Amino acid sequence: MYDAPMIELSSEEERRTFIKDKYPCIADCDMCGLCKVFHGKDPENAYDDYIKGIRTFADVSGDYKR
Image 1 (tube, rainbow, N blue to C red):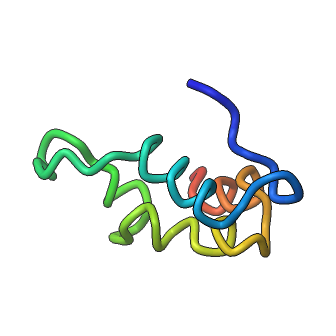
Image 2 (image 1 turned 90 degrees about the vertical axis):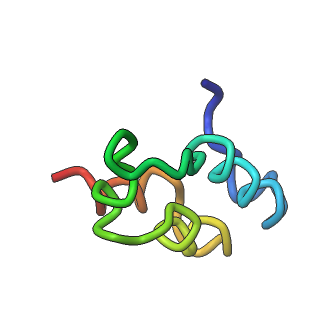
């Protein structure tokens, strides 16, 4: 897996694509668990601040490490 694109060097669409590729929905919630990790949010919504360039990927990820 590759590193998240830096906000300064990427577009919003590149960051959105990164999140979609990193956290794909497999439509089997019992097997996946991503929504549980992100407290019921779709990963794209959970990483909205990163996608919009407001906060870094690492900063947003820290919100979900508990």
